[in-house]
Length: 529
Image (tube, rainbow, N blue to C red; front, top):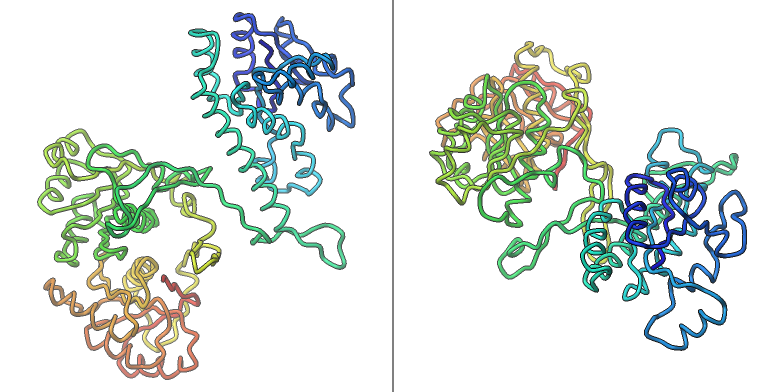
């Protein structure tokens, strides 16, 4: 049996080659890999000795030769293929171990030039991988160090790989090539040449968008029971994102569970300071609060809208302890998420076997890294197409606010305004959010009219027995007329944050001055459709 090893990432390759040699497998290798193996005392034949041609063009040409590809592509069950190999003195290659030049990590580095990117486009590696993967019945092809252990186990046990394993390796190999080519296409087609500059300039949106997602699981059904569904994750998921969650207990997550859980987790992890709880129902936060601990944060969030919280999704940005768990266990909850759980908290839910408990690590870096774990791009499917945009990762700071009224907001009001603005970003448009003392007091979501959202928010507060007197209000987009402002002030609001930018801004500012409330402009809006 012959094995050809040519790897850019040398992780585990020496140990793997030693094990192959111990099994009597002849080793063939290229350039740096061959030198590494030889330095370890392994007998290895360089590819140049096989092909009769030296590596050339700074290593650009090494394995592009019939003696390599013939050995990979020849079908062992066809006499004419074997006769051709014999006629041209070509040996079969039964095992191929290749990982590719690090194109993805190269272009991800700051300061990467086009020349850097081009030199990290592998040519011979993908060609060999495709040849071996096409001829999977006769050749095992490994494209990642994580595959070494299983392959060695089978070779040691049976002296060969099973057809099932070789087919799985082939599929993984074609997937890797697809990922690699997609990365190259995305990078290069996002570049553009300026008339005055021969150096291509990077852009955000490639001329051809190539996405790579890995299926995590099939789901029982989709948004409705007559729809089929599956969950996929990014090829390289960001730390702190929902798809990195560990499910500790509970039923399998449904399509709607996952969608709502993502909405809750994205919202709660945006609060860096203080224990925070977010309760989501049908993709909208129905209660958000900051507290001294998990119990207080949950209790305040639940108080916002107990009715909607029934059967909701609960996310915390702090460890869930027993006290908070006992309180949460009194309500019907579909999914419960936190960075960690005490053993006592998990014991509380042990008898509630249907409650899905997810443990998700917060993104690394703390408050300074608030954007980590977020998508850089948002994509929405439309008929036979995609809408693609940079994600709404704008962070509003106190210094960004522009006070536009005679009445100046107090320091306490400014904090509530920032809190309300942050929550409003995760509420479906049109969005109106009343807050006070780090707690949502009323949420109006997803209405065609901003007036209706404002009215619904106040109705929700009344239903929960909450007073809106002295509250801060966030509107995700500007008030087109003064009537929206009048509704929230009539309900009890004393301070308002909105983007501004309407042709009737002055009318709304005059109305705020007339009503004696403070109003600030954020300068940005947060539509969420």
